[in-house]
Image 1 (cartoon, rainbow, N blue to C red):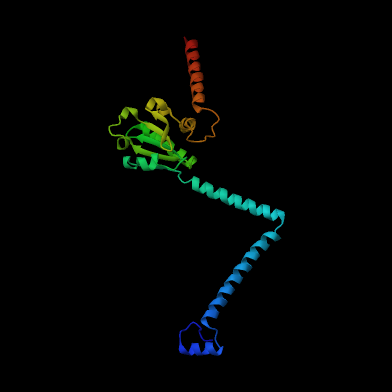
Image 2 (cartoon, rainbow, N blue to C red; image 1 turned 90 degrees about the horizontal axis):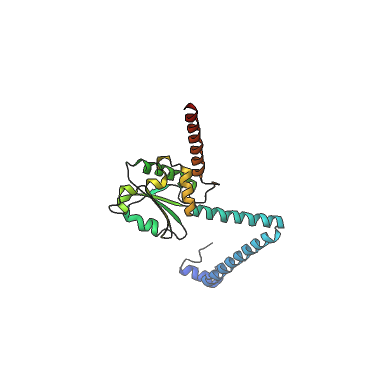
Length: 223
């Protein structure tokens, strides 16, 4: 069959003789065909839902709901590690972080053992709470002349508002700090939703008290 769209004198003659359709009539025919295909497609979709049983409809709704929940979780759980930043990144990564996003910032310096311990604990907590943004920065890159005696320092930020701050080694209890204890501190600020039922520091203090009493009793008996 000759191409009716070819702009030749021969096709014009064939169109006038009725052997080939005119370009206008062909375009109209193609438009009608496209509209008919759309109509059939819409009817098939409607018919599919109409033919579903109540159980099938409920299953379909459950699948859509689970898919929506999965997408929401994927969008929310987008961190999972501690991000190293410089002072110039502070505004963008912390104060201008997404609305409703908790940010935990650790100011540290290399060579300070407690800072290294907290960085280690934060790596584990970042994996446990991927919906929280954990960042760390060398202290003097964020705050010029920040004194080492204030390290480690942790700021807990929400929408540019500092909700909690932990400054200096005494606040953390020194090198005896456990990851659970740090998690509990962050949970009290609201940054994480812990599954710990009570402050693990209490159990540790009770253990020390009992151990100390036993040692004192032993010394008393020996005396």
